[in-house]
Image (cartoon, rainbow, N blue to C red; front, side, top):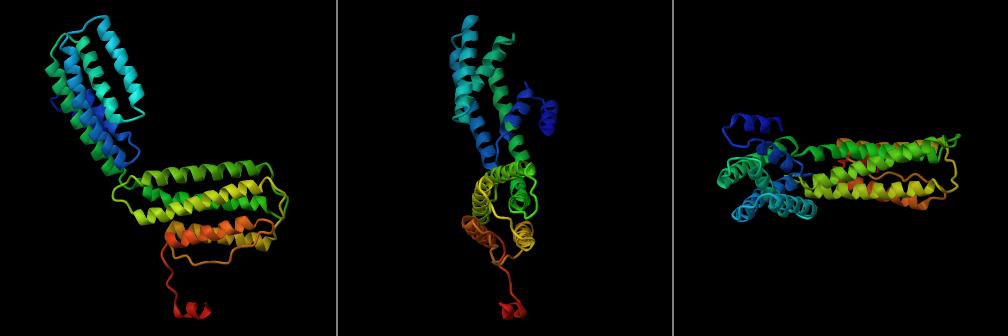
Length: 299
């Protein structure tokens, strides 16, 4: 945005603040693909909007007619923006041109139209370039960290649920909220990563399966919190902790992950089944382990 403002300030162009506004509008896309689409839609919508404005202004409206048209275009923009940005640009551009015309003594549509086209094209190009340089793979780089954080929050919640000691009942809602927050953040980052270029489709598909398994496990754990539950022994809790920690480390470092013994949780077979599904998705999303001869002998 600072770069767009500098370009708008130093280039000899008219109504240069439209450059910065266009860059901001384009960069508000959630992903690179959506940013590219917004850039294209804003450019095409601007050209169509100028044609609409030229037709309206050819009748030389004034007074209440101008006020009514501005009101109508503003309302249509708010209605169209949630459907398609290009359609919204059809109304944004004539609205901007009518405002500029009605508040200026220049009275030259070609002056405002040419300035609008040039400024929008420059601003859209800067916005697209900025996203390509800064956020090209930002979401993908966050996935391992957030997936690891999610698994460890589930491990802490399970420790509270099945502790043999007096569990801290007041801490359960806090850990449950943290688990929900981490799952929501992970889903948001995965959705964003789908719009990146270039995209590792196969790896994202595996990580999506990891998220779905973790989300299902979170639902089962939340359901278990509403039931009477048996306290696990320290050895069983330690086995659960190791199980989660190895899964988290495998995702965080993309380490090889082999199947492990599923910890037993009496009275909750569905949680054990989800453990099996979760570790299988993690095994598929990480590198295959290369066993040495000694490991093969142990196997």
